[in-house]
Length: 274
Image (cartoon, rainbow, N blue to C red; front, side):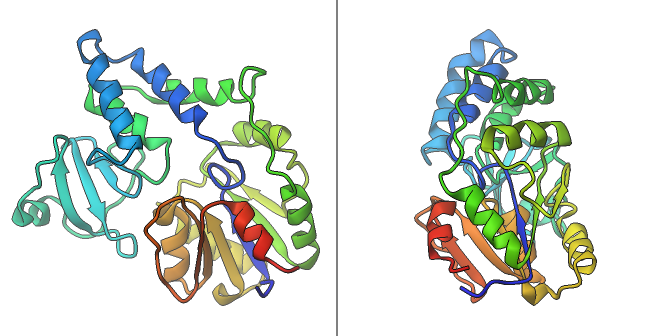
C-alpha cells in the first residue's frame, strides 16, 4: 500500500479492541431503568448485540419517535424506519417525517456507529433521561485497575514508523481528559502529529477534514481516514475522494475503489509496507 501524506485515525473501537466497557455502560444505565422494565432492557440489549433486534450497529435511532432508522451512509437520507418492536413504517410516513438528510445531534438523533450507542438507545427506549453521567462513569472505570485495556501489540511502533514518512492525526469524539487517560493506558503518548478531541463526528467530520487537509497542505486524494464507524469517518472521507480504512467485524463487505475493509486494525497494519 502506498504511504499517503496524511492519515486521520479514530480512537474508540479503532486503536483499542474489546467490548467489556460497553456492557459496563449498560450496567450503569440499567440503574436508571424502572424496575419493571429492567428485564426487557437487558433482553433487548443482548438481542441488539447479537443481531437479533431491529436496533443494530450501522443504523440510527430517533429518540423522539422511538424509531430505528436505516440510513444511506453516503447521503444520510433515511431509507427505512421501524418501531422498536420491528414494525416497518409505511414509506409515506418515512418521507413525511424525515425530509432531507439526517442531522445527528447526539441527543435526539444518534448514529449507532459502534457499541457505545446500543445501551444508550435501549436506555432511552425505556425512559432514561440522562445517559451522559453513566457514560462518564464508564470512561472513569476504564482507567482504573479493575478494567484491563491492553495496548495492541506493535501498534505504537507502527504508528511511529508511519509518522516518520507522513503526518498522522487523531480525531475523536472523546474529550481531552478521556484521550489523555486512554493514551496512558494504550502507550500512545507522543505518537500523533496533532490530536483533535470532542470532534462531534459525524456533524463536524467534513469541517475537520477540510481544516486538516488545509493545515497539512495535502489533497483529499492524499489523505486516508481510518475508523470503525462508517457514518462518522468512512462515508465522509469517500465523499471527499479520500481513501479510507474501515474496521468492521461485519460479514457484509462494503465496496468502493478507495476503501479497504478489515476486521481489526492489526490486519491492516500487517498489510502496510512502510
